[in-house]
Length: 266
Image (cartoon, rainbow, N blue to C red; front, side, top):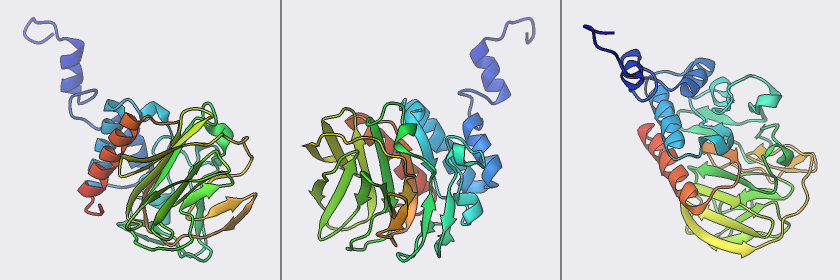
């Protein structure tokens, strides 16, 4: 009580700095603590988590890589589960990638990040979604994220290529490889491709079987061998259960707000 008056649970949360009272979200705080980030990096990350929860898509996320802090040590963490283990899908970087305030840039030759995430880790494969936010405009045969039947070429010959649990790509025209390309599948029959939250193509592509290979960032994992290396700078990557059109747009808006706060949006 305060001055003889009962305090509502909501008011108590506001006083204590939790819940909706403007304090740091506990999930964001766990990530901030693990990475050691501070200042704008921490503020932007906290807002990202708040926005994803407000859009009701936080629970769909399996692995979220904000690529903040400018080092391999800070960029490796999974926002959804910031524990330093393969089972928590924290990244292990290989090869000659470069880290900066803008994220992680693989070298296009031998650099990639192992997520330790396999299709069976989605809640109900082939229901799945994944994406890569590129800050580099390169028209080339390079896979930004993928393994076997899950992959994204953000630009190859003015075309983006996306596969979500399929042997066949969904394609759409692009003018560059800048921005956030996403793939999503909600059923066994149809896959969708998005750029910057906008649905670009929907195709009837039957889902293939699951496989036991980890998804890579910055390269393609073909049955256990890394190849088709990318050198597009990554400012964000994720793996989640399938997103609807509205959820894909809300997710892009949250990520774009995050990167804009960090001054690295495209």
